[in-house]
Image 1 (cartoon, rainbow, N blue to C red):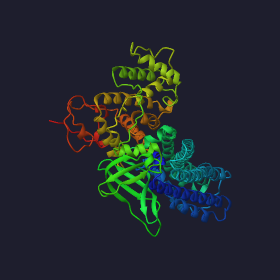
Image 2 (image 1 turned 30 degrees about the vertical axis):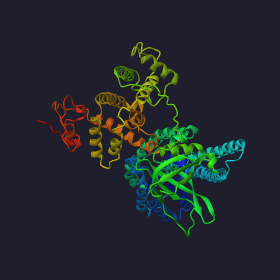
Image 3 (image 1 turned 120 degrees about the horizontal axis):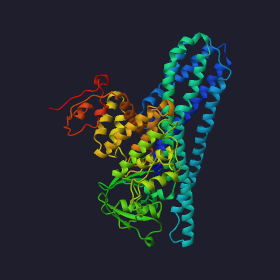
Image 4 (image 1 turned 60 degrees about the horizontal axis):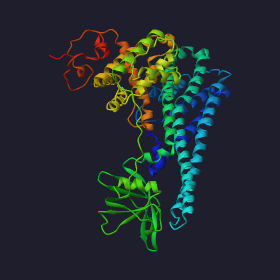
Length: 612
């Protein structure tokens, strides 16, 4: 089962849907914890009960076969699919050898039990602690909020200020605990994919390799084991590349300045509505959603008795105006008029003054709108100087560092990187830098090249193609995945395509020395996936798509490598037909992918069509 990702922005809204999604993750966490207990228990049975070994292995295999991983995101990579099916593969193998008696190695406990117990303690245990803190801060915040909203506006100003400060402190604590809890949930969901599978894989390998009766079956298992190990390593690499970005996003979201930036339209959140009841006026809590387009306000009651359940109320807004403080014994109030209730004006109470401003801004109310000043950062450009910089960097790296271990993975000094960039992009003498001088080393040049590509005002593979590239990378069919990605790269602007072609050729050249530099196409893609591609909005969902960005770059490197034997093709080639598009499109000029088309195209499933 695949669950939708929890966005950090949802922590600030704290909607009922957010709480329901949290419950799903908590149930999954408990299910994982229960599963780990079963695996540990069954593993100990295998170790201690040699006489009942066959029965223990059978039970162990059954436990593995019924468990399935839940993943975050809307699609799985090939590696994740392989990992998700791994326990079923393990279970089938154990059932085949169940009749054989095998001896368990003495260090089986170190291979299986301790890592799983460590995962339960360090990951699941920490998550439960974060949940306790979240529940505690949630209760404290909403309790303080109820007291705060019932505070009379006629109180002394000093008392009101003290109450505001106390509420802000509780709100900050609640938001911080909520964001940290969501971050920990994502951590444990991602880490379990390798922290749980790897100990089981090591334990299983020890059973197979140390028993003379199963040597032949062990040899049969080795190809799958190697494939699974590669999938685990790739998944770990994707996790490491995503984790840093996710942590940075979490830190930014925890800043107080980000709280009000999360309220994008449609506006939604909690409001208290003044309603007339039999015993007088009362304030009823609603979770409200406002669609600016259509001016529709949906009110979902939150404090319902089980005997009198009420569905959502939908109203069409006519106007919105701030309620004067002296006209009501409540703070943060505003009035709205609706088409459905022409006679009755509805009075709402927001959670704070800032919250009221946001609601009024969304509803085009008369409350003034305040915008924070925007400080535009200097951005790199894809111009002649940029091309000159990339060419010089590539020439230097291929000359001095192509065989250096961990090239592009090793990070240079920030001071040296900035010094190089400032010198090269100096308006007075742009490009007047000799990289082969003693001032620059390989890691400084590689870091500067990555920094330049990441600092472009728009990523090299553009925002407009990002969604299509992600969809192509998520395709289950490898041939479609390959053709669609190359078809989409043809749609890049000419400068972007030229820069991408030059860069991919360089990465292929560096990866050809992987025996020395240990940089395979997969490792290189982990570095350049987030460098060449990024979503326009930084969300948790976008961070989880980084692994598919890596797949796009890996395909470009791998396909270019396989297609180094090229053929001469006509100058006028229909790229859409070459790469599988349905609708023909005339192409004028040099084909950007002619170096990617192999001399035996049928071998790679490529059809070449020429235009008359």
